[in-house]
Amino acid sequence: MELGNTYIFTETYQQWPASKWTAQLIMQIRGQAPITFSATTYTDNVSFLFSLTNFSVPIDGRYEFAEYATEIATGDRQTAKTGVIEVIPNLSTQQAISTAATMLANIESAITGLLSGGFMSVSVNNVSYTRYDLSILIAMRTRLQAEVFREHQAADAFRGVETSGRIGTRFKPTPAGTPFFSKDIGE
Image (cartoon, rainbow, N blue to C red; front, side, top):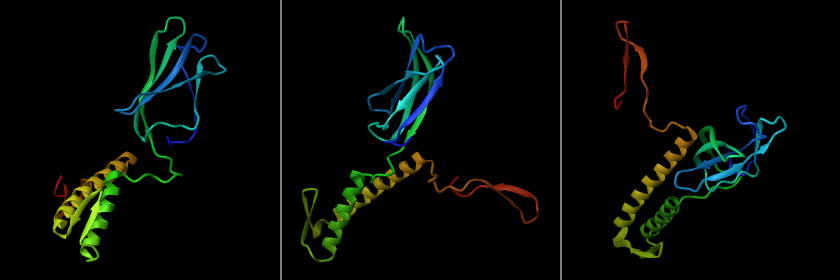
């Protein structure tokens, strides 16, 4: 699902007719408050209509969800369905840059300024550094590069892009012509 789009779907529960039951979709990403969408009854008396207009959840990510049917008379709640929904950012808008990437850009500018000879000192995030502090800036840059790399790997994993760099087992013949399986180094 993409943030900002509208999603309309129906769920049919024969055992929980809409005349006696209500339905809710509850989504939650770990560490965030749950988000609840209430269904409306549909024409056939056993289906519920979910309308997620201008779908807006706090952040993109991997949400766990549950659909519940609640009996109107008693308040008894039954779990109808559970699963995971992947929510991606609204791709029609510019995505915000992470804090680590912003700090990395600032550090890169500071290092360039000190090395080019244009400045004797620079300020990054309200902290001043001189040419003698260049090793500190380089160490900070290394840490931030690693953090930005991890963020990119997490985003790729979220999208299902393989980033391990590992090559799987493959079949190849031996010089004698008899087959064997080989694995690359590191597996």
